[in-house]
Image (cartoon, rainbow, N blue to C red; front, side):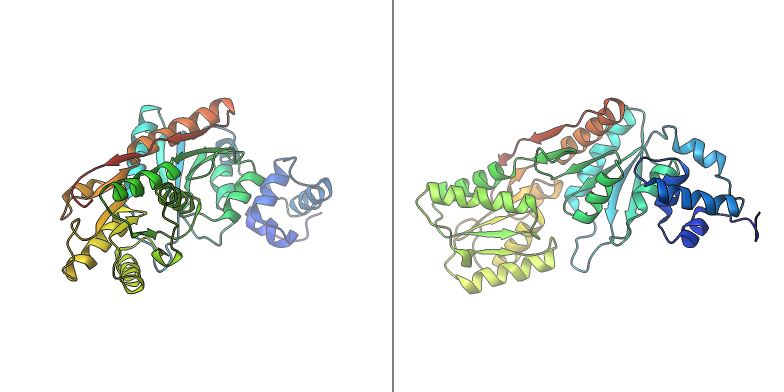
Length: 335
């Protein structure tokens, strides 16, 4: 017999049971992820308070919404807003999803929130998720795997157990550094973004090219920073303080490369005569820099299209794919 007014929401049940909302939802939907004892305790509370699942919402959660969520996270102090490569990638996602009959939903998630994925799936608002390694956390990835959410990740190494698309970062780092060496540069610095798998791989390519040329990489000529013009400028100043004789810079993004060129120009250092600079991504603005930027093309629109197509394929077939796109050197005037 009920002893109080009927409970209105899953959140009310969760509070009474001392569990998360997603646990309540899974228990009421008989998910195999929830232990039998926990299921029964939650169901008993629901019966006691005459709680009934919202039928329209339940219906939505069992059907395709034909919407894919592109997930971004709360920007930290030093994050670049907006990130030019991310916008180009998102444009590719949007175009491909439209062709496939899906809508794009941009989701802004607090990095401390662990319930967002279950909420979007169980409410029927999204069929799957597209995430970027540069903006998500390992904790969030673990949560997605745990609840068996359909998702694809940009920037993950192949063979990770879930769908991914990644650029050939080792080759990109090698091509950039080889080009600087071929221009007669010998003191080539590495200006890296905030460390993750992509940046680490580009650094391995940079180091491999140096060693192939008989040059041992100098730790003093490598700096990692955040993906903004302001922090890129500070990192370039630091590199010049460490070695005023450096004559080449491989930057892990076009934004960082442009920041490096600005610092060099202010010091009246010739680019590329005195210091050659190579960027990464080939964002649209790269060709309009002064001088036009030599860079590694990652092809954001292609990456976005592949993310959309392979996630939709996964939704329909369950097939897990890991795709790599090539890195291409684009020679302009900065190196």
